Image (cartoon, rainbow, N blue to C red; front, top):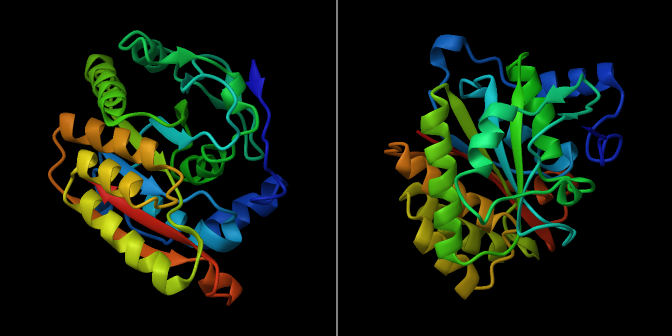
Amino acid sequence: MKRRPAVAGKFYPGEPAALAAEVAKLFPDIPPEKKQQAIAVVSPHAGYFYSGAVAGETIARVRVPESVVILGPNHHGRGAPVALMAAGAWQMPMGDVPIDVTLAGLVAGKSTLITRDEQAHQFEHSLEVQVPFLQFAQKRLAIVPLVISHLSFAACREVGLAIAAAIREYGLPALIVASTDMTHYETREAASAKDLRAIEFIEKLDPEGLHRFVLANRITMCGIMPTTVALVVALELGARQADLVRYTDSGEASGDTRQVVGYAGIIVS
């Protein structure tokens, strides 16, 4: 089956040429030899007007392989807690993107927590907005998309270890993209204080600490579960550092700093 785009023309331009021009504008020109060999990235998923510059700068800095595992939060409550689309393709304005069925099949077989489920993907925007940036960086892109709902840390760890085991068995390069925005609808001062503390846990490669801190302090980081899972995967695959590319908020674009949404781009290598 083909998944049709849910937010083309809303979060990003729906016309191919306009989208390609927008992504190119948001993508810094970084020479190939200066791009990082990353295991994972953390990237925001708001409309491109708000968070596109952070997402573009983050993904532009890494070498994007042909296979990318995209982990995003479930904003709609539809489908399984860990929902994997394991076959078919995503119909996108800049061209169809196939599912990497080999890697997806390996992921599906590594944990009973992971369910083949297309329903959770139908209206979810958090993974979709990452795809044009990945397409721009890698013309032969294939994806493994997972939508993740609220999980305990133990469940996040099981899913992360399963994905890492699948990537090792796959034997080819694969990048993890954790899609998340940070604090929602608080003042810039309050949001940045919370978000920078959460980012410290990511920089320390501490998935359990991040999970505990965000939940204990009721931080409205929508992709806390995908980010926790991504850190587990990265550590299992040998990650040694995480570097903040940029942190900002919606007020930079809108001018309104009374109720912002925070955005962070982070590279894990």
